[in-house]
Length: 480
Image (cartoon, rainbow, N blue to C red; front, top):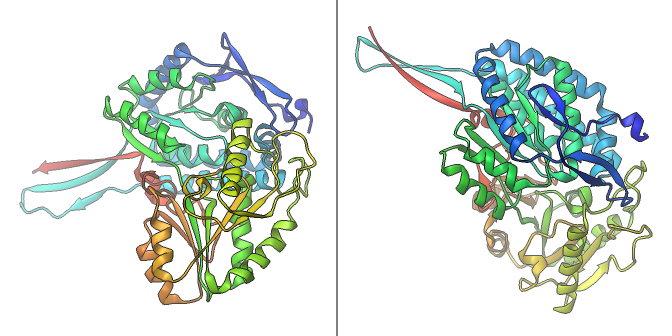
């Protein structure tokens, strides 16, 4: 699709209208290095306008019935489906995600809206038996209030709907600060929400290259009652500290360092296929992609052979092409980090068994790389790479596998491959992770809780658990 065919907005979206800003910034297509668009660059003034709009709209939006909110969301679902190809093309142009993955993400993002459109009608209260004959104990649900959300670039649509959909279902208004790299996806969804009949002020999009300026305004505003953030642990910690000053509700999905455990009784071919899908989705730029592959010593050679065979079939190329598997990294910083991890590992004795050849494309591309002989003093084993680099290590027994997997401050996602049912329970019980895929390298789904333990975050998104993050519970004692 051409720029005109994509028809994407570039202005900020505040109080039901697309508005110009004094400044703009250039959004760069990482596959070509060309300027895709000049996007609104919001600052303090726009942040305050968004807060005012969200606060004023909340006074009426919270009074709508669950059925009214659900109907608007169902219309939004239909519009997302009707515009799925355009949204996928925008996403691929923004961040270089292969087009077939972008299509899958739009479907995944739509799934959250569909789920919560239904779940809005299942926000129940409770009557608790009283210990006094003249009292009744009631518990009611109420929306938290206006929400400020910050999302990452790697899932431009799904990271928004995973937060927005439960917020709308609960009766909250919403301000999104999308990442600078993928702001157009958020603005395109604002268009569709407006078309779906969402009242003015319920949803605002404030793109910016001045993240801290916008965030500081909204985090200091006591009318904003919740922060929902997906991003690094470092940034999430700073935001949580600021949110605490006005005692905001906080949901944080933070960094990961996912282990992938392959036991000797596993289906090696299936484990290799799932490891490839898990590791190389979006060129390894996902928060739950495996960063450490541990294989039991007795099957290392068999697994490596099966894994390398699949990696060799991956095509690096222009993300808009239908058969591309690996697109560019999102920016030069990401590419440099991945290369630094590889160089550190090789300097300390690791072997590169795939990835020696340079990609044919110029720019931010990196050939899928597989490293063996990796040890835990190497950066790639200690830090999240966020690139198409797969370090393979070995373990002797179950106890060592668990110890190695848990040897990190993070606890977002982990993967276990085995055909022993007893081992499934022993290992999953012992792993300190919020998401565990058993013989499954891609476990995420809208109806299940998504979130981490330890330094990987607070709260859950998805399923009825995600809805509770946007609700307050009121206890009402009624004396007769």
